[in-house]
Image (cartoon, rainbow, N blue to C red; front, side, top):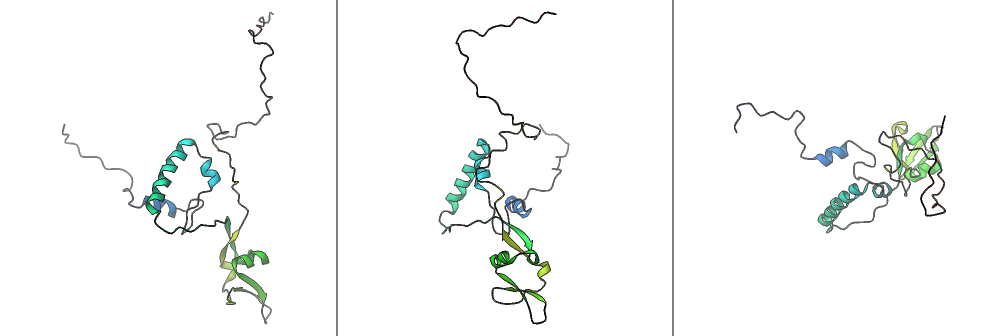
Length: 175
């Protein structure tokens, strides 16, 4: 049936034509300007229904771009640090050196020997130990609905009853 009432407009903003780009630009964990990294331990620990959906999406993605010459990627867990906060090993890792020049000033230089201007405001990526273990346990396995960890009490192993007959019935306590 036709109604004379006007069609209600959607209250939110219009749908984006680039939803994935919009989400990745919000800088969720593991995303930078060039890559989105999903730690394998976390992905494999997702609930089964999530794993099934992700498997289908990734398989379709890989089928569509399989013709490209894919390199093997080396992913290194890193964090941003100010250049002036690094020790010698970390400076070497990022390709910089620290020295005292002829005037007695502390100077930072890049691999080519060029002076790094304003090192106090220069940030670099420095490798760190991976905070996400490879055998990450599924967070939903031991977490009750409100998000508090389930108490971990040691429980004795269950043993079968000595006889297979009916369990003894205790008489109610009398007062």
